Length: 514
Image (tube, rainbow, N blue to C red; front, side, top):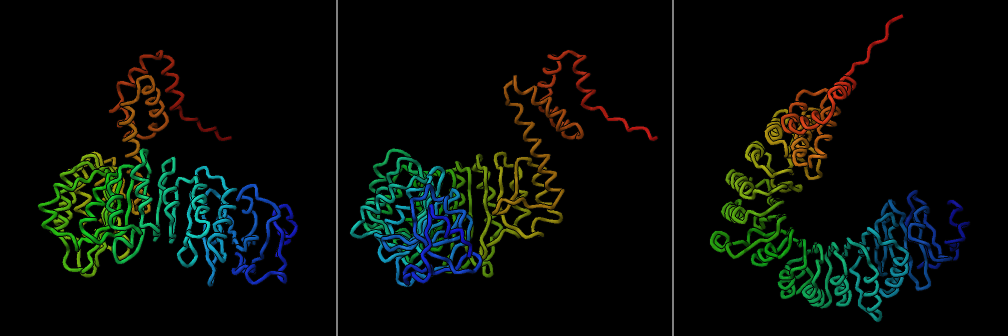
């Protein structure tokens, strides 16, 4: 092992392996497969980044906690905590990841607060999770755990498998700035009463709130009582609301009607009454501009055509969406997407005139759109606002040589077709060449609205630098901006204009052979 740790007396002191107590011994191996050593701190670190030059190591503190420190970019360790408590803290911003193990929650909270006090929170994230069992913040020093959350100044907060006290949840709900809060399998000790109360009293925007719980009913998934969940859906300070698959039909519809700009949730479509959707949707006013829905058919019977047709028609009547995402978590071996659903989806898209993004990407095991790609891409070609179509598809599903995409983007130069990772569908040269021309086309159109004083020089620069070897691009630019070019020519003496053009297009002569 390198002597770097042993001689770095400014920060760390090695505990000789022969003197390590069982609870002080690091229960992992480092990145090179060597047994990791345990250290104590000789001084406070200037920042958490000070640990990054070291390999992964363990730090023992007097409160009998052992903190495993993984430098930024290092591999996550495989730890066994046995009967001890644990907490994992990820802070991003080039900071190391901390895995804190101890006998009591209070000691772990103290150690977490100690290390967090050296973190630069600017543009930071904060992710807390457990290594094994759920972590309970309640105890003799539960107020300290609330202070721990007060230290958090990150704009992105993710909590996983934690039990939150009323004081902690109040701190989270009253952050003086907008945050993105994600709760993965978390529970509230008071069933969420303090959290919802604080949100209801809040006057400024909270930001984004997402639940990713698992359970047999909605209360288990959210960690909230039914009453508090209903109250949460009525608050007006959320910009985004995200939820897991919602079991109860009426609650799912209430979630869709949350007073937010963006909503993402899953719905057991089996439990939705088609008659309710056909006759009773007028009272369900979905105000969100961005809508992301995952439909699941629990009993895997026939495709719920009637239910989805009614739902799509309601979205068409609303007509205010800017982004729509659908996925069907159905068994592909027992059902397919009917043609009627495809046609109704196209009508829904056109009814939403300002729709910019349509996302139909699927996860493994979902229903695919391969059989309908020709119909879908042809049907969407005349939508004037649509900019992005995200969709899965096999190589052959897009037609020979990606002909379905080629026809779409040659007809509508504003649309891009990509997969879930935002990679362009297409071949190596042909499709990228069309997109390149389309970007120039859109840029030429955009010049028309530029201020006159800026427009003419931009047109001249584009003509001389971007179009000099392309007759097609020159024609596109001049068809949109002839008046601007004329203004520029009239403002420049003729002899200077001729000299500039001759210089720009001059072909260098070949040297004579000796």
